[in-house]
Picture (cartoon, rainbow, N blue to C red):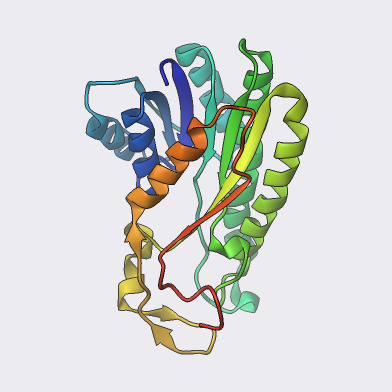
Length: 250
């Protein structure tokens, strides 16, 4: 895995941080993108001095200018890009759909859908032009790419859209040795899911605590997907807490 270069968005916490550290431990140099520079620096600090380079770059992936500047810096510092993990995401308040504001809707669309689109565009430009040509894009889809939680229309809609984006990128990247896959994650133990231990709304109107899994399980899956040769691809992978209420009528 020598001289492999990755970019992880949302790398300042949770799944992004865990995946960036796992990639670094596997021998990758990793660009760390996110809005909070201090948190990106903390991710880089946790990686230690051994291994590849960790490059923190503050950027808001919902803003085209930020994304262009991010990828320009990655190109200058690394010289190539072998992997983009489109991980950054956000949600809206869990309130009835008719009570959501347009700004709340657009914030989720901006980060969860526009961000991966903008980042994929820039990654493809680099991957087409570099030698050896090609690379891999991994999109963070979520269990919500298959089934909604109550009052989750913005998040669920964007994650369904990511599935379409993944398929289109996998198809359109073929002639250029660029491949794309999606990891759908259920209840990884991060700051965002801490509330699940105390109970979250269920489809039948009740509140119920939900099991979570170690975020390392997700990070290891991302490393596996990233480590495949470009003539092989995991198009879709679901990694979930075994006992979470997803399969069946839970």
